[in-house]
Image (cartoon, rainbow, N blue to C red; front, side, top):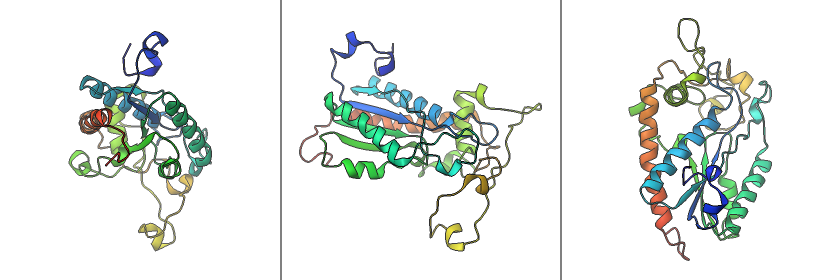
Length: 259
């Protein structure tokens, strides 16, 4: 029994303990090129949630890790078989109910650990701000290493590329598909451009239809990935977030919080 992991705790333990911080991992179910599993974003979120909560717990944080939500918003993959979509309004309502449940049990500090780019929770944070006593923090883990990304990886990773593949090779290599020569069963992750310069250069945003953008749902070249890169990535994330969990756990949620 890991004392930070709610799914493994029992009522005898929980009813005698008041947690300060709750971490809710959120993933999705969708294809990741030809080589990574459909549950990749969910596996990443659960893995990182467990590691940062373990490190935070050992450093004194009073934190609980909730079960991972395995579904997310994948509207742009509607044409990809068995991509399981939950619309943003539905997902936000579901997460809101969890937040209100936690608030009802006296937890005032909640971290949304998001592992999927299609899940956009900033609007939920704005909507709930000032209407509930709990304070929400959004941790999009893949964005939190932008300042050190180039020191860890050789090429960008939008989806199922070098970063995600490295993480998978480090922590669940048995789920990474290879061909008969041992090479990753994946294409190069090249993406198509639209006919509009403004969209291609990021001046204008659209919802990108994944079956037109990519060949096999990969956006980013995975072939430079290594397990060592994945382990170094997790070390950075754990160091940064476990320290935050300790600080958050010890913070007094007074009228000026978080300032």
